[in-house]
Amino acid sequence: MKPWARYLICAVAGLALGAGAAVQRVRTGALGASTAIGPWTTGKDFGTAGASAFTRAVVSLRGILALPAHEARYYNAAVDSAGEPLDGKCRYRVTGKALPSKWWSLTLYDHPGYLVSNQANVFSIASAHVPNPANWSVVVAPSEQAGLWLPTGRIDRFELTLRTYLPDDGGVGNLTRDQLPSIVKEGC
Image 1 (cartoon, rainbow, N blue to C red):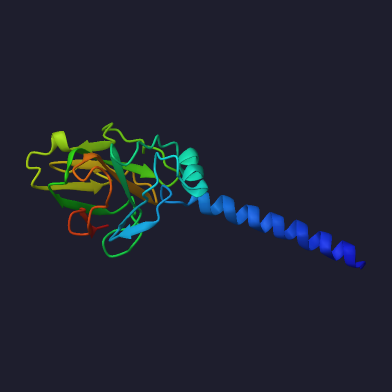
Image 2 (image 1 turned 90 degrees about the vertical axis):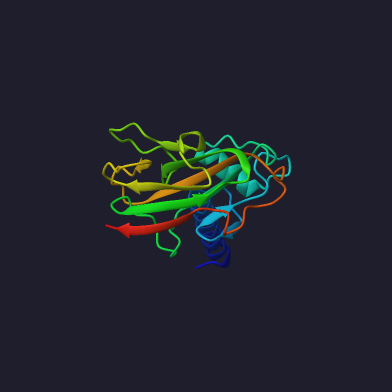
């Protein structure tokens, strides 16, 4: 085989592998996250002019309209507090304390970033629905639960997104592991 043909084959294979790896990285990107805090991940450049190309690609693909950090902070979890992937056939308890923000919401998505269809039409829990914001818990499970419940729709894998709106620190920092809710598997 002529050297130029080998170079051409290697170049085409390299471009195909590189493009495939880039697409996979963006598709599996946790909202452009770069910082892990327990089971939660986040990034600092959402909604900024300085957002990295990776963050912009993930936000564009996942369909999230990211507000600037001083208006909202985003935390995403694809694993529980033990580091195991979130399974839609299992029951989890998400437990938290008062979050340093004016308002927050916890939303369940499938891995591509879409709301999960369910008969109860419950897609998110907001701080306004929490009876005791100083010490709260939400059950994430496939079947209806007493109290605050987010249905999983029995999908294989899901993700949770915690949004804190108007953070007390003006969005300059991240919540700590102690401030963010825990995600504990209670059974399958």
